[in-house]
Length: 108
Image 1 (cartoon, rainbow, N blue to C red):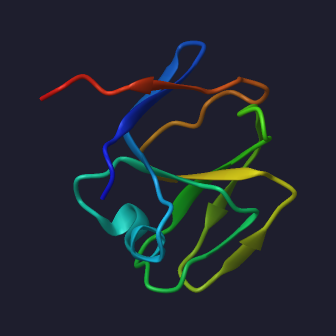
Image 2: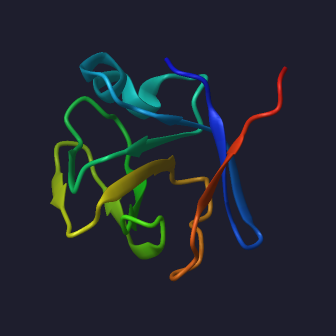
């Protein structure tokens, strides 16, 4: 899995987010226990292989939050987004309209 980053938008922060680029990274996604979120360059995601729902944050090309939703096991979600951020349900969503920026994670 690639190095994680911090996403920030106003007062909202998520640490431990990874960009899933390769097929393996996309397949593993948020099921990796060392990951707190997965950022995907896509407009659709599927819930095959997950056992509990995920929070989806739909982002524009510039990283602005344009929507939020849930992904249930077995479901397919399509949107007009440029990026999709998968988060556990326990992670609060960034506010609508927030522009998320990418910051490097601090070394362990």
